[in-house]
Figure 1 (cartoon, rainbow, N blue to C red):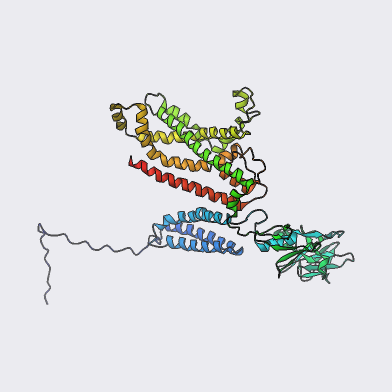
Figure 2: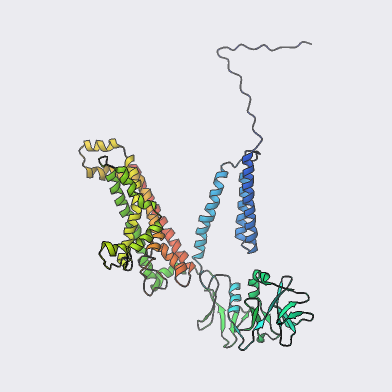
Length: 539
């Protein structure tokens, strides 16, 4: 049997090199390759899973099933993306997408939902919570009833109250069992020290179950009209009787003295025929009433339209003045004939280096009409109401915002001017164009190509410049006879804060409606402005 040997073939000029062997595909996923980076990733994802699981259990405990569903889906997505060989791009997208969903889209959606409800003081929770709160708040202490030293006891999860009566007998009762004598119980004076089948709670246990204890009502006897024993601190109790009774079948409250019947209304309150109401109410949908109230309620529509007009004026004038001053200074210090330009530029950006809220507080002190630096020193003791007169307060806000905002415009205009080709300007000069014509026909159009989007963002920022308004004037001076605490220098965003938190009665539904209106206005103006800026790109 012969063995054939293959001779190597001489490589000719047209010979092709041998084809490379196909590269074997790695069977190890980048996401599961056990290296130090994998261990770090495993630890981080495990921490995320632990926090997510805690959130799921906490949300399930309060029956927030929407949050439970979101957390479950988020954890599944995180584990799938970070341990899958096909989801490498997703590793960089998932964190940002989750934060976008939670802090942007969810907040916007929830704000929109609240704007269609009566959510606020007196309408914070559900109808069941409102019924329970009414029953608690309408109870009155029985006139002449004694003060009982009470002892809090527990049998399993059930709470009970115990007292020592005048005869020295121990009486114990719970929410569904009236006070009755308990044989075999031990007492030390007016305090129970032990009872068969019950555990006497100490101060630590009482503090842990404070909410349950304050809601506990123990009937004094089988006759409900004699009232029930309640305690607020776990040591002292009183006998209370209800002034209204709730009929679950009819879903009504009845005043036990007058016989007035309160029925549920569409506004989330129990209301009688004479218009009187029981508080608190509950949260219900009210449709577009929060939106129409800003236009139909004369007490609210007047301040609202004034604030709306001032908001537009403030945002537009802030952009125009800061951009005008910033552009002027940028042109001046962009001229090579100006000596020490770097030093002057450093001085001009100093206002931009200070936090805005601190600068506003400093200016508030300087503009104080009684002892401010401007009135006392610069104006020789004049009494100018910079912050208390409606028009002067608005002027003060614009001047302070000019001082705070022109360094930003100065910086972006300086950069944009330096990006304009010098040969274009030189050719215009050689053609005989003057400085004003060059600025109007060449410098400004070329400048606006890069600056216009920043002007739009500056408008949106000043439209919602809450910090300056709140720190400088607090929105004042206030409007008279307005149902909400708003003033002449309030803008829409500070009006939202005042309606939600500072007007005595918190109206989150109305505040959310104004927030949605702000979003629509700023979004529409920004969209239209960006569409217009596209025409500049054709220059």
